[in-house]
Amino acid sequence: QNSHAPLNIALDYDQCGDNGYPDEANPFYIYQGLHNKQRRLSDALPLQVYRALAREHSRGVGRLVDFVDQAGLGEEVLFVYTSDNGPESTHKYFIGKGSTDPFRGDKRSLYDGGIRVPTFVRWNNHIPEERTVMTPASTIDIFPTLVRLAELNVDTANDIDTVQGRDLSCLWLGQCSDSQWIDSLRNDPNIKNEGEIIWEWREDYRGDCLSWSARFAVRWDRYKLHLQPQDKDEKRVTKTTVWSRIELYDIINDSLESTNLHVVRQGDPQVSSTVSYMMGLLVNYTASSAYDVSKWPKSTIDNRDWTRVDFELGTDCHDFDDNGNYKDPDAIISIPEAEYLTIVS
Image (cartoon, rainbow, N blue to C red; front, side, top):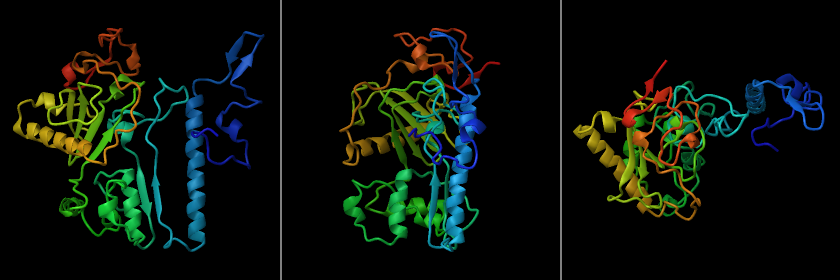
């Protein structure tokens, strides 16, 4: 079963034909002789598949919610709806479709387009309706939240190194504000969290060059910090780590992650202290027992000098030579010295 195919096969209509899927009646290729074949379906096929997936997904979720409500179980069942990250880059899969606008990045990127996903929570007469929580959270926060809502007796102090995540229940239930929740984390000796979220991608990346991010990303308060160790074999970073990429973005005002404050405001004490503080959060995490170094890829992400490279939107990053120079001089989008995006019409 293709993990990206509809969860349910339609029984009441021709699902394949209606959405442009290849089948016996509508094959992807028309064969004209043993070695001659022509594509029958147009390049619109990925969009047709994408729309079909979205429609089938919506139908499936709607049927489940309707069943629970019709059974009178709306106050007994908590719905948590979220999504996988994505979409896939068309450089990796022909079928890749979808957009992360207005964010930069796609699947396997640590820019927000590769990690930010929608989340909706519903629990009738428990969770206030039509309320938006702006505090950044992660899917690993869902488990400890459900444990608290189910009133299970879990020894968080002993489990915190194996079960990571933070309890979001007071935010979901509308019992605290965003700032009050952050304060509760700071005052909890078992959590030792300042509201930060840390990501790491250790594998290689193939896709749009503007989406190729550093190995680490840290979100804290309104800021997002991207960090790439110069030594690609360095697993646990320290205070003495030498960084080949440092990017700081005000994610609230710069959701595209296009203006690197570490460069454009170089020497600004506030920026310097923010970078130093967020580096410390990462160093503390990789030094803890919660950081797993047992799984490591055979080859890590590229370590070229990103401050010298001109990026082209829509171009595979593997189209660079061994010195990190792009083979096509007519780039339509560039990041001169990692400062900011320059869009040329």
